[in-house]
Amino acid sequence: MLRPVDIHKSYLKHLTEFAEQHGVTISCDIRNEHGAVIIPKGRKLDSDLTEKIANHSLKIPLEQCITLNRNFDGRALWHGYDNVFKHYPDIALFHQRWELDASLKAACAFYQEFPLLVQKITILKTTMPRLFKQAIYSAYISLAIAKQLGAPKEECSAAFLAGLIHDIGILHLDSDLLKTNGEYTPEQWHAMQRHTLIGHDILKTIEHMPNVIAKAVLEHHERVDGSGYPFSKKGLELSVMGQIVGMADTCIALYRRELAGKNLSIDCLLPILQLNPDMYCRKVFHATVSLISDIKWPINRVYSDEKMPELMSRLKLENEWIHHDYSVLYGLVTSVRPHLNDGKRSAMLINMSQRIHRCLVGSGILQKEHNDWMLSSFVSNNQEDYIAIERLEIMYGEIKWQMKQLKKLLFLLWRNHHLEHPELDRLVKKGFMQIEQYHKHHTEPELH
Image 1 (tube, rainbow, N blue to C red):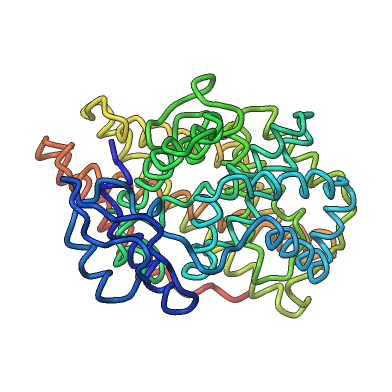
Image 2 (tube, rainbow, N blue to C red):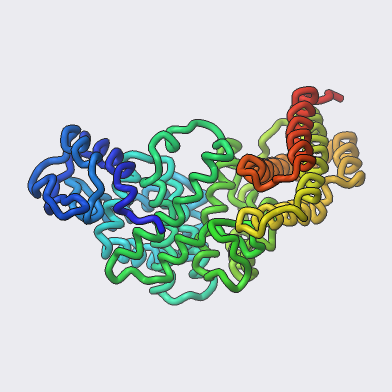
């Protein structure tokens, strides 16, 4: 079990960065694991004290011994959302359609009741602004889903808070990991998965914290089909609130990864979500789809008509990539499956591969008719088909991302010697090399 007392060093670096800008006061004696005072209360946190604290294991978690000189409290949180609605018409449209004003004010007030969480979100806002933005949007979508499900006011506020704090465990991860630019390696990806456990353990120490919130933070990366982490739970083993936060987190991640740079409306999430209808419990999935689909969104084109031939050529190439990588990876998983241990990562690999299989079969993108349709759309110059093809680019992006996760997990199992059979070891190496070589020699789209 991971405990806050074991992971204060990483959080200390964030506190030090905050202290340099706004100030942090030691509000009670900081004691080492034996109870001896190492820093008396009343001192201001600085680099010298930071170094001294870092050399000790603490009797009481560090965050319980300090006070921030500036806090991002419930009132500031509400004003932050108000500014979002003023500057982003799509979100304002969503907010008005679902009449979320009163529920959001109540949820911000609920957040104010937990000073330690106010501290965490304040630190997150200052030192990890990108993650902070994802947190406030995840909280907002969690609130909207809970309200759509007919949850009472208290449960809506709990869903909001769970969405807001679901990633606070990341503040306690190794700082070198957090500095990583681009995609994580398989090892770094595995290390990042600890944040759910850390966040849960922190919440369990907070007085009057509803257990349903701590459980939701623990489960927000679990999936109904068993392809999630940290425990690869399935179906009824999972809480509805964990599924709500997981769905909200997914929507925000998808938007940031696939839509944000293209000036597309929120409704473009629908084709991506519908690729994987079995990842979340049915009522959470349907509530989310209803929230998005029951609004008349503006239709935005990403590419001019002149750019469509280039896009179609690129999508044709990406379709070939997907077909090739899927064949190789699915073959590898099928070959190694009988030899896997019954561990949670092995179960996660199998469940993830089955999910991608269902996704590809259900979408039909590997069928000949799919490519025939793209070709006929190009010839006919049909505007509606052009919009659909632009959306197809988003779908392809999501499928490629999922296949990368499958490859990383298979890599981890191989690196950790879960595949002891020499022939299987050679098979996995050959498969990885085959994917690498294929992409090296298939990088230029054919222009028509």
